[in-house]
Amino acid sequence: MSQAIVAIPGDARSGLLLIGDHASDHVPPDIDLGVPAAVMRAHVAVDIGVAPLARALCATLGCPGVLGGVSRLVIDLNREEDAPGLIPAASDGHVVAGNAGLDAIARAARIDRFWRPYHAHLAETIARTRPALLISLHSFTPRLATAPEPRPWEIGILYNRDERAARIAIPLLEQAGIVTGDNLPYSGKVLNATMNAHGEAGGIPYLGIEVRQDLIGDAAGVALWAERIAPVIAATRDRLR
Image (cartoon, rainbow, N blue to C red; front, side):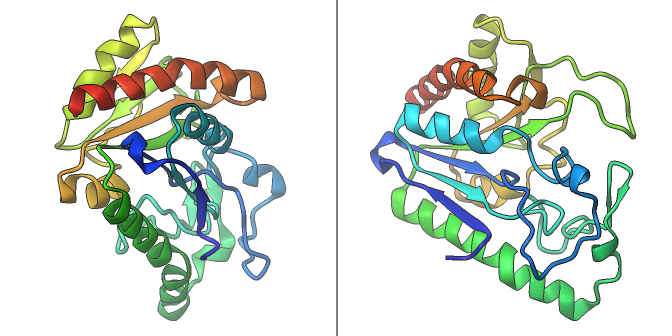
């Protein structure tokens, strides 16, 4: 299996498939990004807390998951193949020197090595398991260096054209006392590549969940938010069936 893929086992009869595009900070040893180690632990390189939260949610819900296995600075798996930011030369003020000079051959090789196997695996998994609901799990930083306005939401629900799951989940989250952003802090109408390709293109409902990173930065936070989010996911699935 490609380094780009981390599979979490689960029961397809759950009707759920969890996907975490930015769950890893891994950089293969033959790739030199020229980025300090401290930056590789930050939000520009990885969605902090997503990997343990994904595993906790899959365990609670009994569902399978697919996580991205390389850092978003190696290649951003939640971008279209021809998107300018697919292999970023900079992110939130940090220069990624090792990506800046990639020629067309090196760029194509990285896409072939990571992006295509990841999305082929997602397509195959979805075709085989036929989930009733996709869960797209991300996290967001409380404050960007390049746009320092605070982001007060605890969870954001993202969507593009297909709002079916979002319109169920947002009231449930609000009823649970969770400060919820409706297509905030990002808009799924702009940043939704994986769900556009594997959800909307096939008519499969999806729930795009962004959790604020400071809430899931340790084991206690992960456990608390898995407990809070899992019932909303299950209820959303049940109402869609």
